[in-house]
Length: 91
Image (cartoon, rainbow, N blue to C red; front, side, top):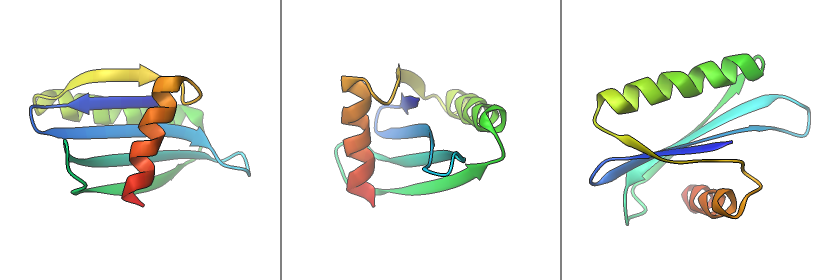
């Protein structure tokens, strides 16, 4: 699952996925739209429920800051693949 929020100049992107060991990983990228300025953080969740709780927390924080959700897709979709390419630029 990939979710992206944007404001006029900034973005936050969250990717929820399982690694090869079956652990749930929540990756969060943020930065300025149109630049490579930003950051990337990975967090290991205890289970899928905790991962989705973290996504809900990010949603509430970003909407309170004036961001709006612009994307919510499965990471295997074409839109999800494009979002993954954006994450790879930050590593």
